Length: 221
Image 1 (tube, rainbow, N blue to C red):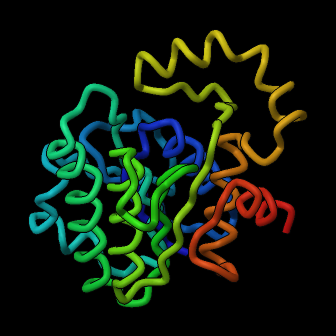
Image 2 (cartoon, rainbow, N blue to C red; image 1 turned 135 degrees about the horizontal axis):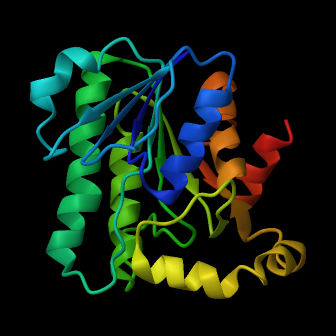
């Protein structure tokens, strides 16, 4: 299996990258992002692109893939709606439309989040835009799946690039095992998400939107 990862330097992206490199059936991993993952591995090839919306310059390097794990995203905190929509909806659709043309029928897994608003009409800005993004992806000629994790526990030395998130995880680290026990439907690890993405890429899933319980179910096989 040959896979693409967008956003491999983020917390979820680091998790799926790690699992892909460990998987015997993954022969090639190509990452696309604005910065390098700073990792060396015989299966790994990195494409650094200052403007992710301009994929035309690298189209020849994006064909021949079985799956794409799209983990690229930003926090909506402090952002204007137009700016958040340009990044969350615009960049994602630009990539997915390009890949659907170059790799028709490929598996495309998009990480949105718990609480995403499929109606696109709710009051919460980020949830509306994530919902619009999901709906648009599901209309493309791709085997598209939406992952909606809730609280994410970073494992294997993985750290968030967002300072506010790093501060949160530093404070919450002692509580995460308790939360996982008390609220199993809300907490997933980066390892579980990465393993679930690979499992869905291999065998699909019965529905296109996977909430936390679905993601955990996939990992249990």
